Image 1 (tube, rainbow, N blue to C red):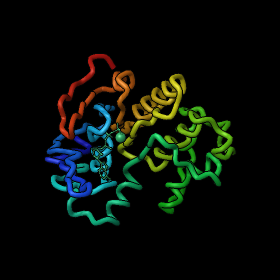
Image 2: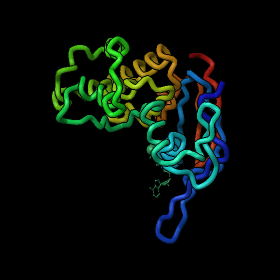
Image 3: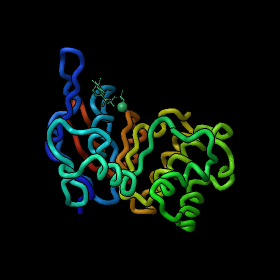
Image 4: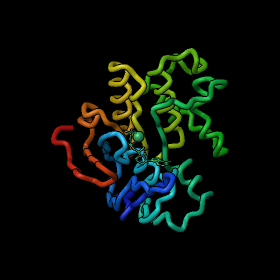
Length: 228
Ligand SMILES: Nc1ncnc2c1ncn2[C@@H]1O[C@H](COP(=O)(O)OP(=O)(O)OP(=O)(O)O)[C@@H](O)[C@H]1O
Ligand SMILES: [Mg+2]
């Protein structure tokens, strides 16, 4: 069963007098629970694809279907509720709130949704990510890898069905990057969360179930990795 799909997705940006076609007629389906890497050269449209698929940005044409339902009829408020409840986001920048502790940062999306935290679930994520000892620290007292693990826990706090990640290991050194990636992969498999991850790093893409390559806004290849 597809958790999310897009049909003929196109995104154009106006740049002065010119129109840049960042995404050109992309149609893709994503299965529930799969780990899919999106690769391609700089400027090929990877981030644009992630933003339009996750409704952070509007498409110029085409549509996104989440869980069998077209998002075309959703207004901005409905889209932001959908993102908050069903999607998690991890970016290259950790985007933690500097004044809040690690644990408060993780709880933030749950609080924004005025929900009661599922302590047991949060504990499980925190244990998998190995950040038990870091929960009372402010972000400034954490390493990049630790901050990104807090950001991953925050992205998972609302039990999303899809985790969208854009170069999540881009700011980390090789070793921390590999650790964060394997945790991201493990935690999403463990929780059955679909992982759609943008990377230009082919070693990262190798870890995925499936690799989609985008060039000039179009999908040029889409293949399952033999060994996962
Ligand atoms: N807000 C914007 N306004 C105008 N042009 C944009 C905007 N965002 C992206 N673009 C253009 O769209 C194209 C695709 O950009 P995008 O950021 O999706 O590439 P990318 O594959 O993520 O690149 P990178 O690997 O460098 O992050 C580029 O030509 C870029 O300049
Ligand atoms: Mg990008």
